Length: 72
View 1 (tube, helix red, strand yellow):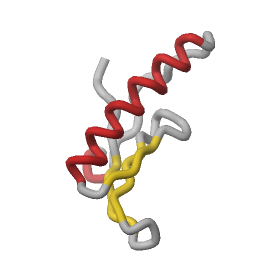
View 2 (cartoon, helix red, strand yellow):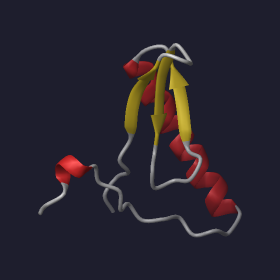
View 3 (tube, rainbow, N blue to C red):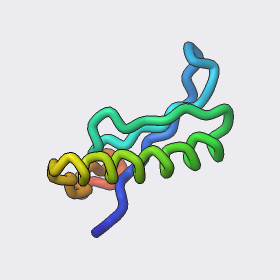
View 4 (cartoon, rainbow, N blue to C red):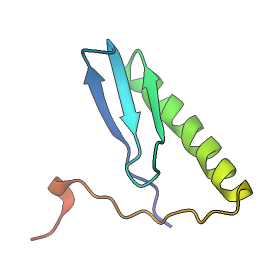
């Protein structure tokens, strides 16, 4: 299985970096640097997967690809 795409962007409103994983609903993280937010996102992803697995819900496959990767 391919890994999940992670979006990272700076939020002026939050004064820090936000990371979200589009394929995993409500899976996001916050950090003061892009390195920190990526590390936090990987931790949150594992917790999200464990929680979803324990609840018996299916774990979605990786589908999201940013527009820059789509073939026309």
